[in-house]
Amino acid sequence: MALVIILDVLVVLWLIGAALKNGYEAVLPLAAGLLIVFPSASRIPLPGLFDLTTQRVIVITLAGLYLALGRHIEQGSAAPVPLRWILFTLVSWMLLSSATSVVPTISFKTSLSQYCDYCLVYFIFTRSLRTSQATVKVLGGMVGGVVVCAFFGIIETYWNWKVTSLFPVVASRFSDLESVDIRGVRMQSTFDHSILFGAALAMAIPMVLYLLTAATNATRRAYLWSALLLMMLCIYKTNSRGPWLALLISVALLLLIGSGKLRSLILVIASVACLVLVVRPGVRHSILDLYGATLDTDSPQGESYQWRYVLYHVARAELSKDLGRSIWGFGPESFYYLGLTTDTVVDGQVHTVKVESCDSAIVELMMDTGYVGLCLVMLLLLKAAFVSLKTYVVSREPTRPVTLVAFVNLCAFCFLMTNVELFGWGQQSYMLWIVIAIGMTYSSLGQTELAKNPAGAITQDKLELATRRPVSRGRQRWLPSE
Image (cartoon, rainbow, N blue to C red):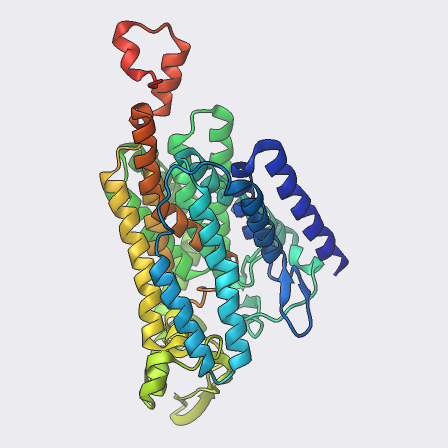
């Protein structure tokens, strides 16, 4: 408890100090990184109310700084918050579902948590990101947060020490799952489970790839290359199939619709990865063995894979019993209180097995908020992905691949929702809502900057080149307009 209090005080002082020294916008990348670093165990229980996690301390401090400093800075656009009607409808629906919940107190607390923890983060970042440069820095802040987690993960794997051992033991949704299984020790760093850490890595690696294509400083390039190699090692050590596939989906999308420089970088990395598979046959064999075990229904990995399909069957069967429940669900966070069971055949005999885990965010949304709640969440994510992709296609901004990163991150997250329960809690959800804010606001940022400064469509490298060399009449078009 004392450690958590000290950390909370230091975080608050760090954020306030950064805002007073470098301005409000300097706090955004710092806050984005800190939201990822701290584990869920870093919390102060408030009996009868809620747990004051370090993430909530960060959000409260960030909201205070926004009210004190951020909202008074002239904004480039007075446009309303994007996705506001979908968010309002989703929160209202969660409250309606909570009113009819089988565990109303828990459901109302969960609904309030969704609003205060994530919707508030989304609101702050959508109102605070006023320039494309600030947006890129926020990406860098999230990368920095994942790099810190990756260092902790390396220590955990090679020195057998977890940073989470410093914090009080807190029950989580993965408490019934062992950290060591047939796949060996699986790196999880400050996250509640290795697959959640893998999800964060699968989102951060495309950010690093973009930042590498935009880096002009040798020191920064060295840092980003080191971060990329570290993250690739960590995502392998998580030994989680979902994040591996999510990363492959992201890289495939970047290769398909990314810029030439980004494609070249990906091809270089792919070549290095193939070389590693040849030089280190153990790595190749471990991947192939895990793939083979997944297809074997008698193996633990195969059973885990098949269990995801069983969950969909159990959820649909339970919802079909009551029309009202199929519409509004059993209440947020109610899945683990329903006592669901399913029949399974073992050695030719039918056994009734209790459903103790939910390896799908889709299934949990179906059960908690009904089909309507699931559709609202998917509408929100698909709208954000569509806007991000559209902005990337039509924008003239040199930093427009930022929205491509947002698009592939959203695609990867949606894929992971089908095979792990990761929506609405954990560090990876803070990453998600910041990415949504970036994707939804970047279009208006680019239009505003171009309206104020037509040279904003010119690359930063050319602007710097123009300021370093004597300007002739032929180079005047590279100068920013006064």
